[in-house]
Length: 391
Length: 79
Image 1 (cartoon, rainbow over the protein chains, first blue to last red):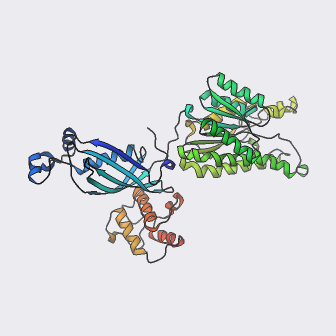
Image 2 (cartoon, helix red, strand yellow):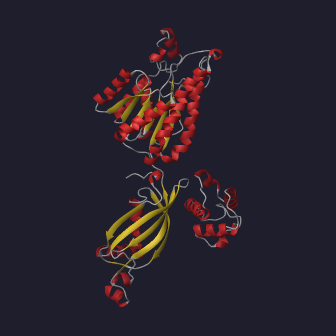
Image 3 (cartoon, rainbow over the protein chains, first blue to last red):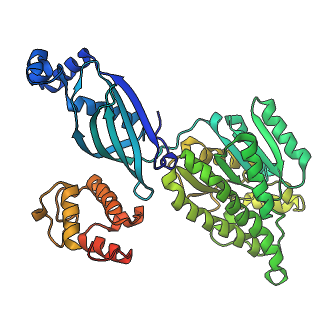
């Protein structure tokens, strides 16, 4: 049983439960509490003093209120801070208690609730009224992979494709986003489905706000929810000296790395908050760490902007069971590097202490860790997948 | 305002009003622990119709800080 997400609880929401009080239960409570007041123990004594029979302890009635608060509303994860109670009439053996609680106030900042509490019998007589103050513990962030839906931007090839397949292999349903190459994205989705997974390919150029919105809508329409957002799309990375760089080129990086993650998060985070679970992972770069290479100022600026956004989101969303992290790999040799000479690639590999470059599958493994329940307590972290290149 | 705050703190913490000095804080009232503090914040929300964030909860640990916060929120005297 997991704690109910606080965001799901609404003012005015009502929880109720019925329970018949038995003589065995009353006797058990007498044994437990040691309260052998003859009003509870001796029916003749109780009748002589104007009661219908053995009187049920007020605290036993309250115990059933506790059950409703802890299992019905607000439910698992409730911490009972205080209770004002007024016992209005006695309860008897064989009475059917109707326990009703209603949320009258919820405080987002304090994660606390005030509930009106009432217990009636089968004759609708009020036995107990009061007010409960409840704190809700934070969600633990544990959900099975098979319940999760993941959206991976730029999922049609390279690192994004490896991430899609890794998430699909875990059991998540995957939305494979692509910009232009439908065939490759469909092939990724097909491979996931061939391995008994579930996936769809969705075209959207996420650098465009409206298309990023459309991607979110398509994912929600297909699967009804999104739990994992992986921002791995990238425009072509072109080395260019600062004075030759145009703002439009900088903007292209910015729109993919920062703007799209912002737009997608704004659409998808409300559902994550409702469920008390969410994972947002950015694929960044080790070039952000330390001294960047020359000629990629726009690229570095946009990746750094995305990371700033990620940190802001991480601190704001942590109370809701949503983590926001990043993986920063060294150069991963994908199609982006087709124009690079073999000699330069070998030199790049030799410049890393590990003497090699990371594979897309290794990036996917790090993303998968962050996207699952294992990474539940890690947020605001940028993991350098760098073979020792940066520390 | 200070007298009403003292009463709210005393009622919530479960101590006599005389145990809540005019400059009381979590450091001077023994039973003002973390759970009672949470309940106190909730009482303040209900009593003064204000919203308290988790950040703010961490600093509202004295009558001085609470009164200053309520004034900033536009809670007028007498309350």
